[in-house]
Image 1 (cartoon, rainbow, N blue to C red):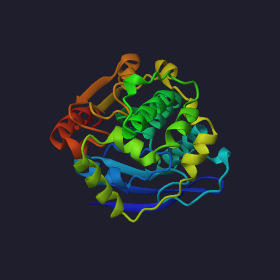
Image 2: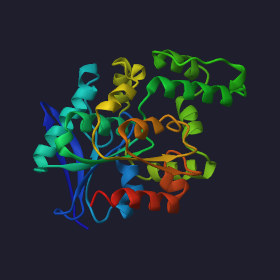
Image 3: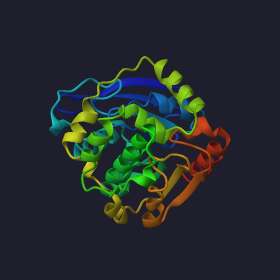
Image 4: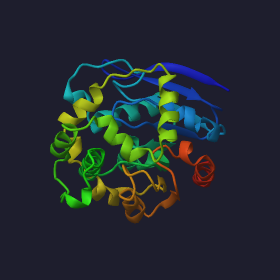
Amino acid sequence: MREEIDLIAVDDGVEVYLEDTGPPDAPAIVVLHGGPGGSSYALREGLEEYLEDFRVLYLDQRGGGRSPALPEEPRLFTIDALMNDLAHLRDHLGLDTWVLLGHGFGGLLALEYARRFPEATGQLLLINPWINFPWLATQLYRASLGLRGIADQDVEVELPQDGARLLQEAFAHVEPKAAFDKLMFPSLHGRMEYEWMVEGSTVVGADTPGRMFVLNGLWRLDYTPFLLEVRTPTTVLLGSLDASSYPEAQTITDLVGGRLELIEGAGHYPWIDQPYAFAEALENALHNAG
């Protein structure tokens, strides 16, 4: 299979890591990983076999994964900056349009790109997207209660305007990874399989993007009102056991008018938990992307 790996200059002093794979004349899909500050490695490992008929662009977003590290400056880590990176990348590749596949935080980026550049966006494929960060903060807080043996129904939690304060309280008692794991993985087997895969990648990205996005107010962002401005055909693949996304992400298809593929028994990485159901759901979505 064709594979070209490169660092692409997208801004003054900013380069991003890109794996350009598959038939060069096939419809292009750019894969947007979660985080902020993650890597596309796990997504390529999980999705590559399903996307072999497409030209797939596995991008590590600025400052994360295998992209060069950047200074700890909040101005470098904004939604605007990431949109600018995608616009420069598409121009660099000479693509008129592409499909955006976003996972977790990457789903938010895919939606915002489609809102700003509808003429360049052929379709959106969103896997367990994160769109309401105050809501996600309450989920993480409830997860922290469960890890401490406290029944969350005994504690009243109001949706905050700024989720960062609720996270501070949650993470004062439990490790952030433990709270996220409780939301995203419905089984110990799924979590261990994901960690085995990631540990084998030797990709150790900086945590700078995540910390800078916190300073920039990410946990105050509820993207729901902006969904009304997205006109791109959209499919949401949603694991019914991913408490970091379900049921909140159903709002996307309610407001955009897209298609929902609910994958029963799956968590944040549905290709691990329910590979056959995920394959069928993704094939249904890709049918419109080819």
